[in-house]
Length: 339
Figure 1 (cartoon, one colour):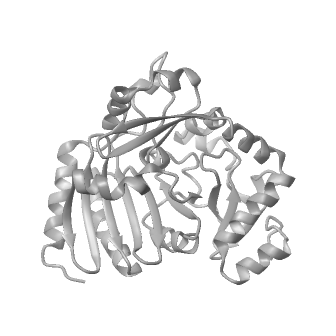
Figure 2 (spheres, helix red, strand yellow):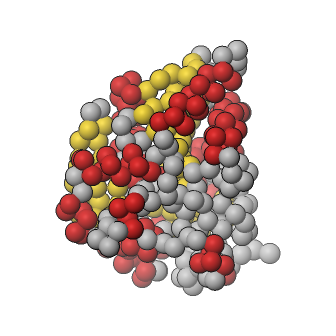
């Protein structure tokens, strides 16, 4: 049965038939901006956002005052809340005007009505099942290649940024919009430690004073997948929980260099400051960790500075000893390995 959610557009169909899904997504956004008022309103808000840059050694962070993101930033994701609400990513609960493109037979490309990126999409699974990276990482890297002409793909774990932890989804946004994409090499050179490197793979660990992440760079899909699985086994053991460990991922693909997967490791969902009476409404997820920090409250936009941002990110990032354990365990796993 063909979904009524799919957009019927001759030009979009031509692009998907030619496997140009990035071009099709770009055209979908243009079409939806004409036909869907909520999306138009969201982009009107985005066009009026205030931004400021906070400079660190070898990298920068951008702060975005975006009132359109209040619902997502402050989303309640506890089990009781999830059980008592309809899933807003299930096809039958999407806004009537929202149309999409079928990708890999398992995902809808949907325009995000609460955008952060100049072009922002949600890639929602066609079937309702849990946000889980172990069963979907291969989809993530494949989709990042398919959309690589224009977009970077991100993943937020169910306990650290996903506003729909009960429904598998990724997001895609304008390539090179997040500072970490442009600053990656300088950050790696200044703050990184190479865990393993040969002609097929570079695996590094980075602690830049705010964030802690593992970087995977490789041209071969199987190497990327195998490296991620080895990392995730270690990280899962460290967390000692049946739940998915806290993780955010930024993934992009380049035809010349292959994949770059940035895996942010976490200790907390939200900083303690978030829960105070006059606390900051800043809930770090993949985009924030990627260098575009979203606050929907103008007061917070005015008072966040370098010191406060450092405090927030250090609090939610994995503790020093845990990151040290990951690095040591990865070195051990990769010491006798050659691809």
